[in-house]
Image (cartoon, rainbow, N blue to C red):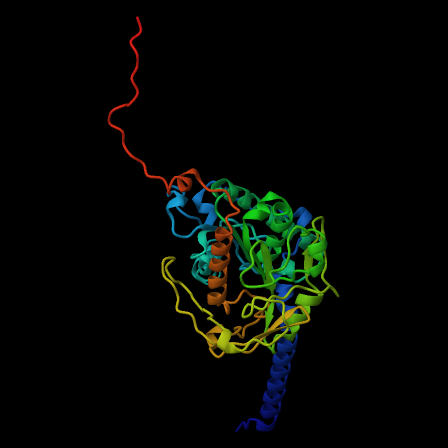
Length: 400
């Protein structure tokens, strides 16, 4: 009778189990490198056929756009907000997000809009274009074709902003908003459009989770300045936030990111970056305790007309060496998800939702109160009584 050699089976099982454990450890240690390799489009940008361009005269090319048939003079929100949305496309097949990618459009509508666009609705009408955003892979390497993919995405944003300007009358303040990739493009909008008269209309620009070097304010952004208080207008707020566990992301942010200098992309390495603490609205390196935190939101799938309830007092924050260090949020819903590539993905939450919401509205109100923008003719007549005259007091002489 055959008797199995149990010792051999145990040895084989032990070896297999050991190899499996070693493989899992290697995968975990090199998970970010594996993630990056998977996202490589596999062809140079120079030979890449880009997706079809959006038509920004069409409503279908906008994640958010107001009803242009409504006279903006009649609205209670008196600003116009242009939001450049963050990255949602990892890559793998394309350098830039295809315009007809319904899966990513769904993610933009379901996650990005309620978390990253809606906070600014009380400050003004919301404009947020779909654009052929560069893949996440284009921000994980500094190759020349990655830079070309980023520039390609910006050209869409620029065209969308030009269309926005045709719909935004001169008496309305402008709020610019960008998160991660979107923040990179907002920096270029500031350099291309706000170094002249349009600066007068800028209530505030938010450059969030992409580094903004301080030397830009003596270069491509020389007509602008960082916000020094929570009341100031015509200024720039910037910060990149990191928890104590985010050391790898913080290093990539401050050492490996590319920024545009008005002519080309260049490395951020060893350049001081702007950090405005969103709990203090200053560059102070003082620690802001969690009692100052107005609220974060983890909203998904909300109707555009619904307002999520913010979670207050979730984190403290402190600027140090150009980075914003935050305490781990109390609610797990506001923490970074534990998944492969999670360090690089756009979070399904906005830790400073309510803080940004109130700040944007306040700065719009302050710019209007300064009375430096032109008034529309209708507003100039508000203080006059208009009386109907039934009979003309003028006598017209007879003419022979």
